[in-house]
Length: 404
Image (tube, rainbow, N blue to C red; front, side, top):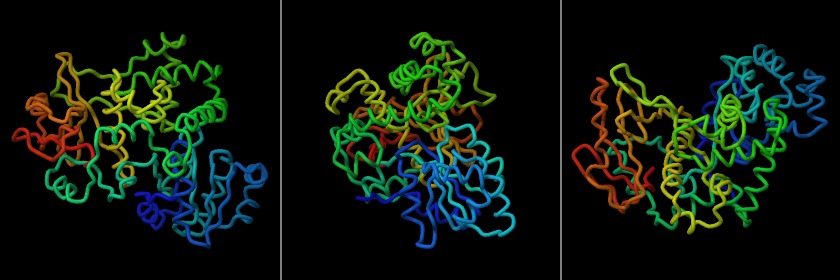
């Protein structure tokens, strides 16, 4: 079974604009399946996981491009950086958009070399797992707090119960757990083993794989919290610089996202550390040893997982539209907090995230701090488990999670 991906139209658009398309993201999110589905019959496919193809690409890149002549999909491009200058040469000589579709993992240091070697020639699309919109067959829309947009979405969206939400949180967003019958726990056990033993061991920064796995678990236990490198380091038995380096690996590989604090010269006493979220709640639940959606929903981490899920869904809504998520958060030394702030076109859109079905009228009370920024702030959202889209004050609406 194939689930339609929102990025399909974006892939076609970028391919018609750039000679090279690069799709990046964590393992198993459906990068190869997406491109194979969009490709026509004339486009060849080669994976550099194949040792023969990899050897040819590394040792004879010119011959490789003769054998796999564009238009072509080259999977696992990070294994043969030697190809990049030859791709650049081919692009400059032929000047055809859409010749090369590359697939790679963000975590490898050489992926930076892709964008540098092919500057001006490559369109880069970060990809994540399935969004709730994709699973519910809804059109993708980058999330905004704009009421008319939410009202129009209300007409086509499917309501989700608390049980359905936590089933989805527990199951996660990897396509394989939604398209095949298999144990969720077994899938993520295999996923972690592959991620740590296949990918991480190739990076010189990680000498002890088991220690890195403990670090991964420590990060999962802190999803939706502010990053504290010294606490992470203490828990795992590593130095703070090592904790910072290892967290950067999780970020560049798409496993974790850091939401930076909103900064404005007029705002004083703000907290400057980022908030950390896992992009796949299923992986996070596995790492923190929850074995059912029911036990997770009633646990002490229930709220943290709910917030993590909402943040990841909003991020995916932007990525699936081919856009960079313009997300921030606010916290100051007076304990005033705003979970998310969307900044677009010089305007601010504040968001609070509450598991409650009936958020109180003061849920968005801290939104007023944004008046100090000198920028206009628009209608705020309280994303929650409400049954309906309803105003709770003149400036704030309760928004059901299933409208993201």
